[in-house]
Length: 249
Image 1 (cartoon, rainbow, N blue to C red):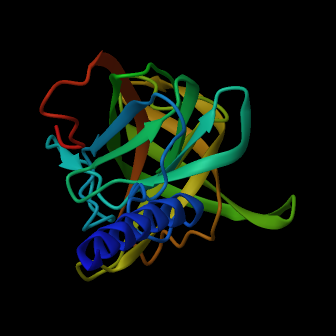
Image 2 (image 1 turned 180 degrees about the horizontal axis):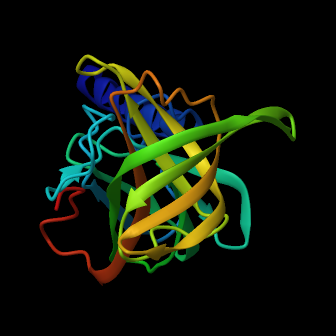
């Protein structure tokens, strides 16, 4: 009788623990997924590379490709950008996120670019975005500051620059980046500028009038480069295999 009593008590204790676990998810038998997405999901993988050495922002873009690590960007539902999800690339330039099926927009700002890449997520599939950001630098052979002028909520520093190019470097209203270098390595500053006016290239020379976001001092600069930026994106889709998904290339 004592043995039967112990068995009965054990059965009741097991039933109590299972019932308590269902009522209180902090007890054993819980789902350990930290932030599960309800229902079936797909995976978004974003990889970002650039030809700009991010460890030396004053240097000109190169012919090499660098992973753009620790870069933040957002992903929003295609028809509603009010609740963005923030993603950050790792040191290899990759980032991944599980998402519910649907249409989304990947948004990233870098250099002078505001990039938007539409994507679609399907359940059980990997959608991969390979984003490449490239700059082309043009040495400024002559520059002349034309003055500081008031703009909406700020001031604008206007200047004329001469570039050696047989083709048009930029058009009116284009955004460009000025890399102004001082007398020692690593000394200088960056300035975004807008093309205010342009003269078509003649005999390998083009003149641009720029409106810079900060005052430019060409007299004390050892060199100035004007860099234009472009990007390309490739979106691919494939089923998620047994090996799973990686943010790396």
